[in-house]
Amino acid sequence: MEIEFNRRTLILIIAITTLLLATVFLLIRMRPNSAPATRHHALTPTRPSSSQKAAAGNSHIDFVNQSAWQVTGVDACLPKLEAWLGNRYPLQKLTVAITDTVRDGMTLAVQQSGDDGASDAIVRGKCEAAKEKAVICTLAVAQGRPGRNLDVAATVAIAWLVEDFYRPKTKTAWRQPNQGGLEAFQPLISKENGSWQSDCLHLVR
Image (cartoon, rainbow, N blue to C red; front, side, top):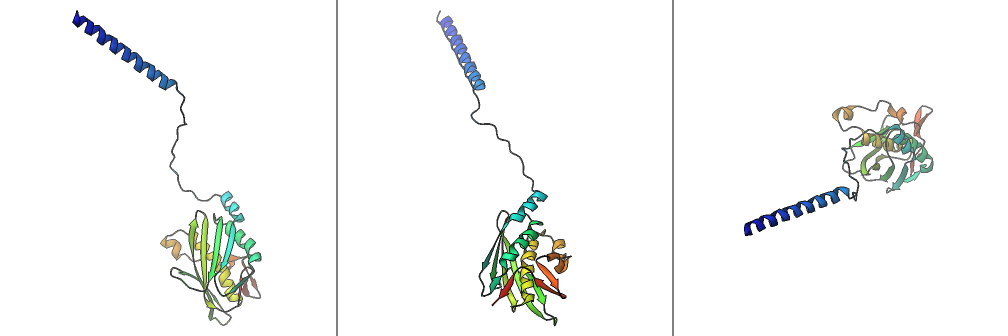
């Protein structure tokens, strides 16, 4: 009699447990999710589209003068510089700092010779990433006196530094010279009576 009672009790316990588990399972299935499922996709770097490059024409450019030079022509230079850079690079903000001190890492130099063939203007510089699509370029007047040669060297240096910053970091790209020469930097500069002149920056004492 005692054995029969124990069997009935065990069967009852199993039945109740099974019923409870089934009920809990059904409640879980019927309950709405509190948050949608999140899908993770691998991001593949892409080259900037033409629309991104066009939008970069609205980029904001700041000039910071940390030198003894007086920098003039900035107001006329900004629209031309923004248009020249915006057609080529996904740049949203550019800060140009002009200094008298040549620092380590300023490996790129723009040299503009005078009429006598002597090098009378050398501007060195370097660009660094500040944040996404923002670049800081530092220019140092290594050699030169006020005049069109220094103005051309400083103006070309800004564009060439940004170009060098975005150039692929390969040996082939490093050895490849600028194919367009100074003509590639128009309308930042222009030729007048056989000599180049800056249509942007002017450095005076």
